[in-house]
Length: 210
Image (spheres, rainbow, N blue to C red):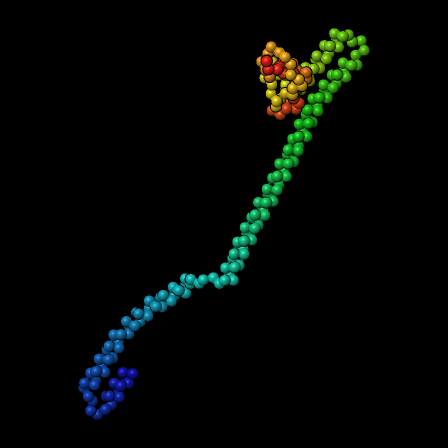
């Protein structure tokens, strides 16, 4: 615009020097301002470019809901997998226990079959004497005791011991020189498997002295 004013002014016959000088000053000032304006616009353009390259856009509510649903589904799937794995472990444990019980009974049965064979062999002897019959019974009893030892079946024979209600069953109280609550007679032996009592011993216990 200043250039147009300057051109019009020069066409006037009498040109005002002051006016011409003022126009030139404005043109020079305008030229000096151009780099400043371009430089001031450059950071703005750079900032706009950076904003374009690195947009920080907040997800919409629908996107946040979809993300939450995906996470919830992942947690549910993990829980279902853990539940199924727990059921499989429990089922396998039950099967293992059942197999172990059957196997233990099978082993015990095989050992007892040999004891039965020994008894039948002793009874099959027609010309057995009392001594030979007794000897055969003692051997069979030792064989049975060996089976019991192999399977941790122990006798409970508490003669002379203190009465234990967990392992003994008193059938009567008798006068005795021994201390009170002492087992003075065993009517029937008891048995225990490991630490579990299969059958308590039937005993007679000494009375307290009056």
